[in-house]
Structures are given as C-alpha cells and as structure tokens.
Length: 188
Image (cartoon, rainbow, N blue to C red; front, side, top):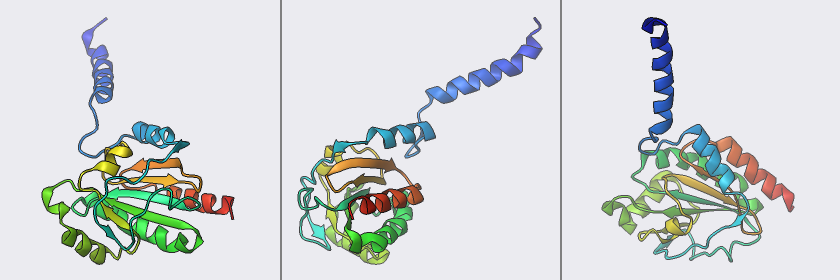
C-alpha cells in the first residue's frame, strides 16, 4: 500500500490518541470529565463545614444547622476570573429561592496570599452584591473535606444532607436552577 493515502488517516488517528493522553489545562474540564464529576457526587452525605475562619453575612453555620434546607456550597475566590463570572448567577439563584428554604454558603478559599485578607473578602462581597453567608477557608479545611480541586465549584445538597450534584467551572446555571427548584418542590 502506498504511504500517501495512509498518511491522512495515520495523522488523524495520532491526533485523536494524543488528545486523549493530554490532560486539560489550567481550570479546563473536558465534557466527559465534567459529566463524571456530576454523577460521582450522587447520594453521599455532604461533608460538614470545617476549619473555617471569619464568617460574613451570617453567624457560623454547620451542615446540621442547614438540615431541612436545600443548600448550594459555592467554592470561590475573588481573584479568580472564572469565579467572578459565576457570582451573578449564584446571587440570582439565591435571590430567587432564598424565601423557599434555599441557602447558598460561599466558601472563599484563597489561591494567593492576598486573598486571605478579611477586608479584601469583605470588599469583594460588597462589590458583587453578595448577601448570602460566606466563610473564609484560609486553611482549605472545608475545601479538603469536599475533596474539591477547582475554582469555582458548586455542590447542591438536599434537605436530608445528601450531596446531589456537583459542578466545577462556569456554566450549567439552568441545570442548577432546575435541580434547586425540583428539590424545593419535592418536600413542600
């Protein structure tokens, strides 16, 4: 067989195999991997909120305090542009459902030293109009309890404390809205 007709096929096959071997870069999550993250979260008991420092917009909370409510735990940091892109969607979701038994708990886990400053976090809350509870996780204790690896990341927990859904990155806003609405409807 001549080499020329085989060359395009060999190149395409090599490119396809190489794309499977190269991991996603800085914060990117492939569609298959994202789907696996969503499915992997199903039905385990949500970890508690542990090792947190200063709380904003609330007294300290625990998962026990939040039993009977639908909860979105949102891992973010104010210096992350992807996190900042999600904030309008998270605050809109909170505004839409907060009077129906829904709580957002922001877990501010810094990536850089300057993000550890309580006054910087407070300024970010004001700048972005965040009124839901937010806790500083400067030692990554809650981050580690959730085995989280990404900024931003959202975890939805049902009224019984079961982790129902998780998503890393931007997007999936309509899906999260549907899940929250269905969970609120289920027990009302």
